Image 1 (cartoon, rainbow, N blue to C red):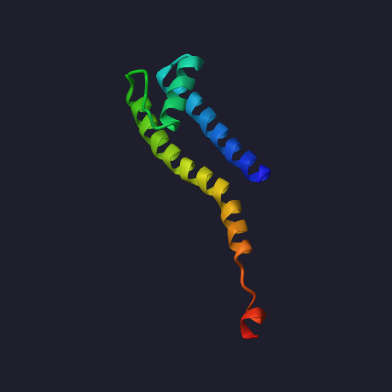
Image 2 (spheres, one colour):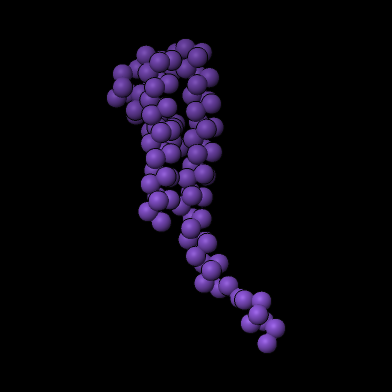
Length: 99
């Protein structure tokens, strides 16, 4: 479980860094404001700062779609080992069913 938690949080952290760099590059936001915007998009709340350039608006749209997908992937990574254990718990051997 710890491995899956680390991979999930690593993926989310990597995605947050992509957002910070993108907002800093395309909209020339400070690192703090870029972090705030990226974190708010990842959390599903939307942007805080108004975007002025077309490049920043396109980046924000693509980043929002990406974050929606990454949220599902991270949730799947966290739930998969639990579901796997659940399936093992209720596993029925074929040899047991024949007797």
